[in-house]
Image (cartoon, rainbow, N blue to C red):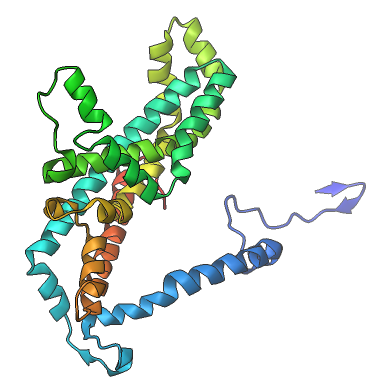
Length: 322
């Protein structure tokens, strides 16, 4: 091919979708890489370096001897854990409270986000949002103290139930283990629902308003717009958060269970974290290896749950975390 008498040699055809080399991309974005170094060092120092202590789970660890001097016992610590009824009960309690927190927390957050999204008065909307997320910043010690007063025999809940004639005598909420899981779920929802709602409200604001207008023109009512526009619009956010929460199913919490536990509710209140603390520091002869083994088990199961949920979402052609 010639233009004004000069030949133009065509170069090699561009390969569509060809990826730029890693080092070339790194060179172009070196400013971002430098900015990420402090966070990378933080993660390595505080998240990965302590994993060296996992060796304790395979030793009869003695603080005086240290990691290198303690006797190696293999899987004996894990055999001890799974041979104890209280550890198996702690696994049950952890999973039960985590599932309750996940279901209650997710449903309440989505419902509150939808209700706030439908409110047209900005002042009222901001007031409700502020009031609901402020408990997130309260110390768990304060929250547990409030809950113990509210659910006590002469607390507000029992007074309300007796005033309505639903019960004839006060219900012993704090002393019956059967109520403990549900109390934890209610307290967690009250404390975190406003904070979790922020994410869903942010997702709803990104929905194209023309979709609501088109739905209204087609005759869709408010409920139908929520069902066919709002919920599909936050589906990807919901899936990512669900996968992350499934990865945390082995982390039901520590503070609220430890502060509210008593001799009457131990079989229902002790989670894996509480078990690890008691066996590591709660006896005359601390057994650090048992606590580390329990924490290691919890972490490994959490990783398996995270990748399992991600693979299941990918198999269903849903949005994934990884």
